[in-house]
Structures are given as structure tokens and as C-alpha cells.
Amino acid sequence: MHKVWPREAGDFTPWLAANVQLVSDAMGMDLELDDQEVSVGNYRADLVLKEVSSGALVVVENMYGQTDHDHIGKLITYAAGLNASYAVLLAESFRPEHRSALNWLNSISKEDCGFFGLGLETWRIGDSKPAPRLRVDVQPDDWSRSVRAGKDRKESERSLLLRRFWAEMQSSFRTDSRDWAGRGKPPREAWMTFKSRMGVQFNVTFCRPGNVRRLRCEAYIDTGDKESTAELYEAIESRCHEIEKAFGDELEWSRLEGRRASRISSYFPEPIGFEEEDRWPEAREWAVAALGRLRSAVESVLWGGSDDSRFRGRGAG
Image (cartoon, rainbow, N blue to C red; front, top):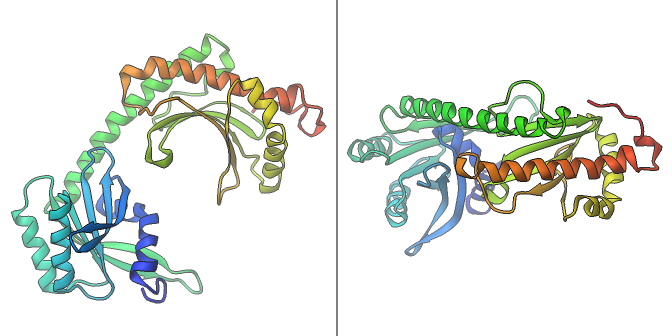
């Protein structure tokens, strides 16, 4: 680990904070970063995570090498001080006595509380970069089975809700223009594409920018080629004032870091999640109007009012 992350506090902890999904996958929970280097008395907890659906706190204490009494004690102190539901000790290897201690803590813990021991490995094939992997050394009894059952149940409920929302969106779009309706059956994902034209895809999506639940309408720009995608986005962005004037409001312009695509977005005025059924009518009304205005504003520049022949005559996708 020292070769990949020379310093535990300065290198590994920030890396783990930026890669919480590894912990999520290992534990079978939907986790997000709540805070790092959190004060607990005279000590600091490395990471505090939060389970998205329940808000339960998960405290993580990481260390290099084999487990020791010091870090076991810190883990219990942090969990108690922060009133965490779950406590995770992350190390390269676990001494038998410390694995037994975590198992004993699990045996006396109440429901919805537990202790985990996660081992960190780095794998390398040939000259490739080291790939991190977390293995589960300790977990509460029957944890995997209960998590899997819970995830299947939540996924079923989530899928049904999303399919209903998108079906109602399709119905609303059909009253405006049949080609807005979206193709195929309503998806179970948190997004849906309602219109595509060469290089530009118009979507509605439930998202979490800055860990805040939002509803977004977007023009997603991706031609399938890095250079032509950049060229298309630059051509659109160069007329951003004209597009925003036609749209009737400011838009968010985003070159997506590390990705070929770019995005032009508008957000529902207030935070909202797909499970808030009582707010669906206002969300749907906003999305139909906003996506329609966005489509009209962008297409008028590219394929309507544009003098740039590069973008004329592109057919519907």
C-alpha cells in the first residue's frame, strides 16, 4: 500500500473519500461521503459515510499493516461518539484475535448495527496500474443474505415507481408532439431519452449533483467521436447567449471531466426525488415545458436559424 499511497492520512484517506463506491460495493450498501477527519474528543475519525436511503452513519477507520489494539479501540470510540450504526475497520490484514473481537461485537449488537472488517488488496497484471480491491473479512451474521433481499425489494419498488413516472411523462409529451413520447416501454432507470438528433440527445433524469436530489432536463452532446463532439459543443456554446435568450433562463454549461460528452442543463427549482409521488404533477409539468424550450432553443441554432452549414440537414436520430 505504501507504494501506491505513500502516506495514510495524506494520500490514502483522501483517495478513499473520493472512491466511496468501493466501500459501498463491499458492504452491499448505498453509501455517500458525509465528512472526513471528523473530531471525536481528542481524536479524528478518518471517514464518516451515510447510507442514502436511511441516513444511517457508517464510521471508517483505516490503517496500514496488520490490525492492532489501538485502532480497534479508536473504531469503538468513534462509533460511540458519533452514534454510528455501522463501524468499519479497514486494514491490509486482520490478526485472529481482532477478527474474533469484531465478531463478538456483532454477536452482542442490536439489529441495524454492526461491525465490519475490510481488507485492502492491490492487484497488478503485467505493467498495468495497481487495481484496488476490498475483501470482506468480518461482517454481521447473515449480512449478505439480508442485504441482497433488501436490495431486491428496494430495486423492485424503485423500478415500479420510475416506470410509472416515465409512463406519465410519455403521455404528457404525446399531447404536444408524438415524436417527444420516447421510444419503447418506460425504463426502470432514473433517466429517459425523449428525443435524439445527430450528436444531441434530450433527456430527463433524476440525479444527485452535490449529493442533493434534483430533476434535470438536458441536451447531452455526444457524436461518438471525441473531436467532433468537442467541435459540436463549442459551436453550441459560442451561441450560449442566443440559446439562453430563446430558452428564457440561464442554463448550466458543462464539459464533463474525463468523458467525451458535454451537457447543457436546466434544473427543477427545488430538490426532489423520484419517490415523492405527491410532487409528480408539478415535476412533470416543469419537465415537459423545460425540455420543450431547451429542444427548441438548441435546434433553432443548429438546424434552424444557424448559418453554419456543418450542422444543417442532419436527420432525426
